[in-house]
Amino acid sequence: MVVTKQQQPQIILLKEGTDTSQGKPQLLSNISACMAVSDVVRTTLGPRGMDKLIHDEKGNTTISNDGATIMKLLDIVHPAAKILVDIAKSQDSEVGDGTTTVVLLAGEFLKEAKPFVEDGVHPQNLMRSYRTASHLAIEKIKELAVSIEGKSLEEKKSLLAKCAATSLSSKLIGGEKEFFATMVVDAVLAIGNDDRLNMIGIKKVPGGTMRDSFLVNGVAFKKTFSYAGFEQQPKKFVNPKILLLNIELELKSEKENAEIRLSDPLQYQSIVDAEWNIIYDKLDKCVKSGAKVVLSRLAIGDLATQYFADRDIFCAGRVTEEDLQRVAAAAGGTVQTTVNNIIDEVLGSCELFEEKQVGNERFNIFSGCPSGRTATIVLRGGADQFIEEAERSLHDAIMIVRRAMKNSTVVAGGGAIDMEISRYLRQHARTIAGKSQLFINSYAKSLEVIPRQLCDNAGFDATDVLNKLRQKHALPSGEGAPYGVDINTGGIADSFANFVWEPAVVKINAINAATEAACLVLSVDETVKNPKSESAQGEAAANAMGGRGRGRGRGRGMRRR
Image (cartoon, rainbow, N blue to C red):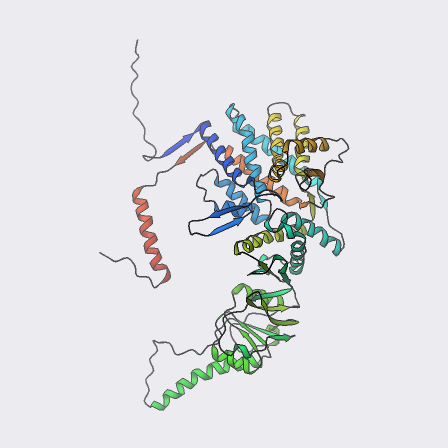
C-alpha cells in the first residue's frame, strides 16, 4: 500500500549556491582542518625544531622558526583553521613567545576530543570539562611558579638571561644564545620601565658573523642621504648639544602659482634676496642655539650642509620618525617644528656622538645618553634571511625578558610543567564521577604533546622518554616536578637545575588561549558559506581599479564612456 504524502512546498531561505554543512560531519571536518594546521608548525617546536621556508606570491622567501610568523605567512582559507592563526597572533602580541606551543596545544585538544564527538558525546559536555581542566591547570602553574623578586640586580640579570636563553635556544641563533641573551637583558634593562618596545631599535647590517653584533646603550642609525659639504663636517663630538627638528632647511623657491607684479626690474632682486635671507636666518638661529648636532626629519639641503660644515656642526636630514623619537627619548630633547626661540631645555645631549663604519654602512651612534631610556642592537650576519630571522628571534627574547621583569615568576621549561599539570589533572579526574572524568583525562593526555614533540624533533624515542618522565613525576614526594626532557642526552633532567626556564605567564596564556580556541571550534554546529555573487565580484574589481587611481591624487580615474 503506497501512502501518498502531500508534497510540501519547498522553502527557499538562502541564496542559490549557498553551501551549508551541519551536524557531526561538519564539526569533524573543522577539527581535521585545525589538526592539519597544527601539523604544519609541529616540527618547529623546541631547541631541535626545524625551520620552514615560505615562498609567497611576490617571490619573497622567509625562513622562520617562529610559530606566529609561519601562521601569518600561511594563507589559510579554512574558516575554522583561521582561529588557530588568531591565537598564535594573540600569544605573540601578549607574551611574544610560545606561539608554536599554543597552536600545538589547541590542535591536540581537538584531536583528543574527536573520538568523543564521533561516539556521539555532546560538544557542550566536552567544553565544560575542558574549561574546568584549564582553570585547574592554571591554578597549578601559579602554585608551582618560583618568584625571582627581591634578588640583587646581578642575580636578577642572570635569571633573566636564563629565560632569554631558553627562548632563543629553539631559534636559528640558538648556537650563540648566551651571547645574545646577555645583550637582550642589557637592552631591556636599559629602557627600564618604559613599555614602548620601539625604544629598542634593531638595525640589520649584512656581513660579518653573528658575534660581530653589538649593543649600543643609546641610539644608532644608518647615515642618511647627504649633500656635498658633508665630508667637511666633524664626525665625533664629546658632550654635544643635539637639536631635533621637523622642518626643511632648504632654499625654497616661491610657489609656482604665486603671481608677483613688478614695476621695476630691481625689485626682482629683492624678492630673490628675501628667499636667501629666510634660509640664512633659519640656519643662523640653529647655530646660535649652541647645538653641535642637528637632526631633522625632513631634508637638509646642500646650502645648509655647507653652512653647518663651515661652523663645525654635524647635520643629518631625512632621519626616520622612530629614530628621531628614540634620540629625543634618550638625549632628553624635544622635536622642534620651528627654529625661533630655541631654548636650552629643548636641546638634547649625550656623552659621545660619533659616526662609525659598520660593515659597508656608516652609522651615526649616540652613546651615554642622560635619560638612557633606549638601546639599539646592531645585528650582523651572512644572509639577509638569516638576519631577518635573527631579528624575529630577538623580538621573542625581548618580549620574554620584559614579561619576566613584570610578572616575576618562572616555571621549569623543557616539558616539565606540562607533565606535572598532566599528572595533577589525571589524579584530579579520578575524584570525579561521570563522563567528565574521561574528558579531563583526555585534556591531561593532550598536554603531553609538548614533551613528546620535543623528543620527536630531536630524534629521540618519545615513548621511552615520556615513560621515564611519568615515573619521575608520579613520585609521591613531589621531587620529580621540575623534571623535563634533556635535549642533549635524550634522557630526562631537572629543568630548573639546567636553567631551562620560562615565565609562568607564557604557559598560562598558552593554556588559556588554546582551550578557548578548542572550545570555540567545538561550539560550532553549522557552517554556512555564502556564494560570491558575480555582480559583487565585478563591483569589487571596479572599486579596486577606481580606488587605486584616486588614492594617490595623481591617478587618472577610469575613462567615462
